[in-house]
Image 1 (cartoon, rainbow, N blue to C red):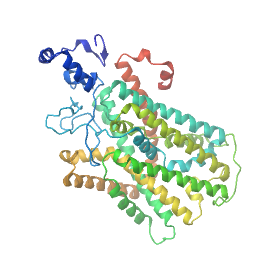
Image 2 (tube, helix red, strand yellow; image 1 turned 90 degrees about the horizontal axis):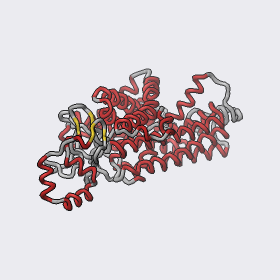
Image 3 (tube, rainbow, N blue to C red; image 1 turned 180 degrees about the horizontal axis):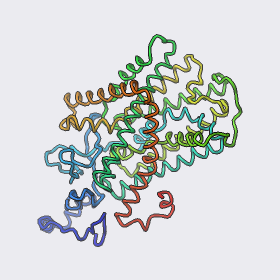
Length: 485
């Protein structure tokens, strides 16, 4: 389109290859029009003019590539980078319409409907954090606690909304935070971003190993002869088979089971609070206003709510598997509504019946009986799914580093490599979580450093940079600019 700008290059200034021009004339405008109708105008332009991608400058000068392929089977790997792993260059054609070798190796299998993605979002975000919200509510009071949950829910939804806008409006080929970082500022910023995300993901995966071990120990509380490190080994053994699927879509319905498990566990705990069968020794009445406390304690309570909504670092990977990435905002909206309702219900009810001294993790408000066993096993189901989701991109990267030729294959060799990769991650994670004496503090520091950047900085910066590069910044609504700044 004449005069239209994308990035730093005026599209009309890019010369069209002469051979393509002659071919277009020979085939006629009608055939080209039919092709454009099938492929879409943007994909057509990308196929006609590969020069729109500027790999020498380390930036992508257009945001118009699709990534749709039709590959069945759970073994299909997602793609977490638009860069070619062989030489680091930008992939010139990830549309996979006519791959030269006949094998569609680069685009993620776009098979997920919006509800599949909603299941995955809820399973990733709504988990064990919900069981610590009553204690957070006790530290903030009814008014500020409830207000903070609603405000963070809106803010986090909007962060996902602008991430979706960046992908669907400016850079459709983006498949990860690392991709966007590379597009904006090149390789150094990409490496920093990926390093931050990988550290955060892996520390979470190590935490999930410990959390699963704790759930097993709590569920089978009468087995006092089993040490915690042995419960940890059992947790690793449980996680191994479930870590083998290579796509989010392959575990979407398992993600639904995870969400249902959390909801049922919360319902059981709520019933215990209402019937007065919890173990709080002394009831301190709840308050509407903020209780007296040190500043850092209040700040920690606010941060706990933010952590309960964290999960944006994998949103681009999830969009990459959707049939229609434009429906991601619907997926996120449905998930956010469910989460807000559950968060408010759990926090307010447990605080109301448990009082200001409610247990910091309300599972332990249940007496040691079969009811706790059931709840602990339900929470264990969620932890297994959360581990799988968190580890998807990291496992992909390690598999790519170890055996790039088997990355997208579905044979026995590829399955064995993937099994070895997941085993290595689990064993090292088990050692790290159990050997490092300050692991809990270290994981908390990493999460604190990453959370605000993942939730607020990166989405806002991606949107601002993309809009400015496209010349759209002047037209961005004032409320969006206020949110970004």
